[in-house]
Amino acid sequence: MKILLLYLTVLFVGQAGAVGIGLLFDRMSNVAGVMAFIPIYFAMFWVAWRVVLFFLDKPETERAASNSNSPTTAALWLFAPASLALCD
Image 1 (cartoon, rainbow, N blue to C red):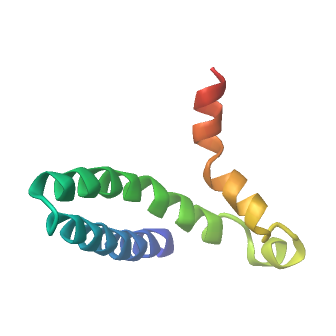
Image 2 (image 1 turned 45 degrees about the vertical axis):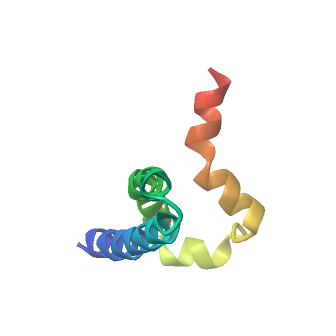
């Protein structure tokens, strides 16, 4: 239940950001607003899930003991599926 609630919270915040970015581009043109909003909207489902897994996947003791909180490790972990898809 904890994972679901965190996922919905992160997703809600991300989707609000997607709407805000879409509205900013909408001032230039309607097409630009939609073209900015749609990719961010769908990408947020994946990003929200990865963020939740990043915080809740490891046990608390293992998270405190590991030194995997560097930005490089986080970036590699978040984009691992994309890099695997490019290797095929």
